[in-house]
Image (cartoon, rainbow, N blue to C red):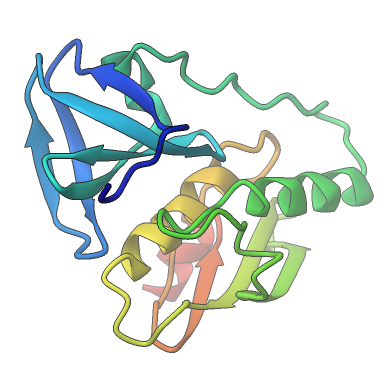
Amino acid sequence: MGGYSNTSEPIVFERDCNAVMVPQGETVNLPAGQNGYITQALGGSFTVFVDGNLFRIDGKDADAIGKEPPTPIELAADASEDEVEKLVWQQLRTCFDPEIPVNIVDLGLVYECTIGKTDDGARKVEVKMTLTAPGCGMGDILVDDVRSKIEAIPTIADRDPGQHRRPRSGLRMHDRQDRRRRA
């Protein structure tokens, strides 16, 4: 049967849409009118099976396959550190390898998440994680997914993604002033 099952949802692309090939990590454009199947819809993104290949569709492009984009995250401006940390971990649990229906936290890929303050008092987040495999073509996509999920949290300052190394990767997010000071 290939990359989809009887439970996969048939779709037709309603507009041209950027997609990332799984597991290669290459970005391609899938044209309007293309038929396919949703094989996984987790964490605000979609894995689709099209012409014998798997592709990851970002949640911001959900409308291209007839779905609703994820709703924006809400957090009070005066949220406590505990509330922010809880939300960061919730966001990390919405990051999925497109081939594995288990989030990166439950897979054990996140081994450290630190929430702190910059010199000027703005919040910063540092996530240390590893990948499912050293040669994973989706590694940069997973790191970008973590970055975008944390960037979506209100009250966390702008960040600098830092270095991404395999098999262990460090993802650092700081505010712009902190990045300028280091430059």
